[in-house]
Image (tube, rainbow, N blue to C red; front, side, top):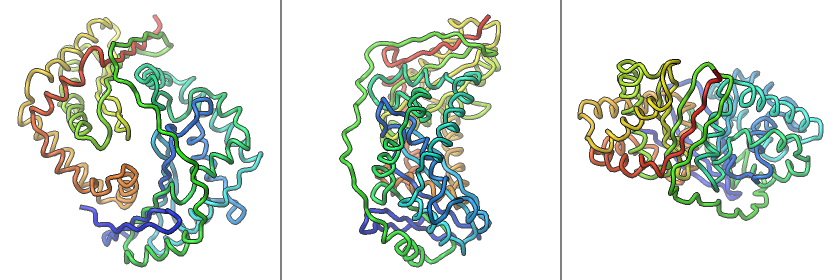
Length: 413
């Protein structure tokens, strides 16, 4: 259970604070509701570009990392399709330093032709190294584009192509900053061994004077239509082994469908004793590895099963084996011991996560962003309440041929 207090400043900034008496460290997390989903399809990769630009400094603080290091802290960030997250851990007495830095770059980011050019080169090089020139680098990008036709989830956080970042103008980037990096689009969460009222006052002092900014009207995102026919793509790449990935559309992150899917993925691949590992890897020796996971995206996401084949395994044989396991889930209830083991693992991971101040701060921001902050303390109960019949129902509704997108990623002979 994570206790918290929620407050909204007049400029729209949401502030969440939680006192943790067990740690000398504090966590300050700033989440912006901007990810790849908020980009123009002709100008993708901007949210990820800003993950880099936000560390370029301001007129008041030319080197963002220096004050953090002087306070014995660490900072970093990540971007995904739904949001961007900036986080710091530092000693509890230095919380005000973190708030000062975050408030400063919310309004005064130094976006110059020089700083933009530097980060454009960095991001383009990252695109090439991680996605274009690395084995299996474009696999997830191809699967996204195959599974989604209209929704912005069809492109990865890095963007559709390097040219979108290469051709970004200073005017484009500054407009993106003004539109998204403002108080009303942000969630600040603080976890420290400090009085909650004091943390709220500190946030008010640092952010209360930040102008609300102009909130440009957000057009509704395109809704992904139901998939009515199977999709398939085969590519050949210079990789060590052939892989199969099958994606199925499923419910959104706050729906009960997500929890059904998450538990089903754990039955298939949640540890060495899970079904895919036992049957495809150890018993039948068709694959070197096998996995199943849910995307966990805010809007309706994907359930994905994958297998990396052994050299003498035919694609048709491994693909049929994956479908056999999915069909079994649609016919037979899981063994009570099997489901209890999965539920116990979920509960243990949740409890261990709550021991870390950074995890707490990140989760507070995440569940607020989802629009259901109390869910942070209800998830274990929800997971515990899932029944075998619900998992069968989920499997029957999800693992349908017409709902599948299959990517065969072949190793060159």
